[in-house]
Length: 166
Image 1 (cartoon, rainbow, N blue to C red):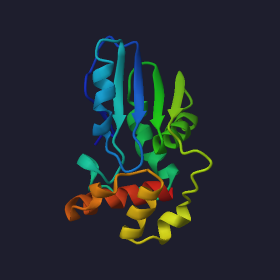
Image 2 (cartoon, rainbow, N blue to C red):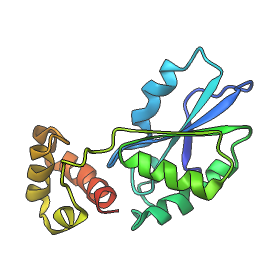
Image 3 (spheres, helix red, strand yellow):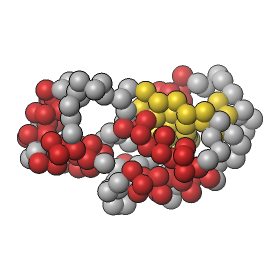
């Protein structure tokens, strides 16, 4: 099963943009990026991390290296020049994947936390679910009410916790 989703295939694309979503997100959050580039010659391939959405049965990664090892075969199967874009957690994954891939036209990263936001992996690991939600809400990372629904909490917290601990 491919680790990439292409929402708008373009046979004559000049560039394939491999887009890495933020912590806890699925590839679907990148559909608006693909929509925004619909009239361009850039084809967007959204990374579908293990353990979420259609790849939910695959175990969550335990390291950035696991993320890279998982996505690299799918990236290597993409035809033509590629560029990487990573948002927040995806910035780290995109950079590491670009280093491992070696043949990337551009790497664009954005939305990493400022140095003044001290959110360490240790804080994430030692927090129970309520504590993690409170910690993330206090840093402005999430809207706390999103996790009021028990089903949403059960679906969203495990990949978010794992991504933040990497």
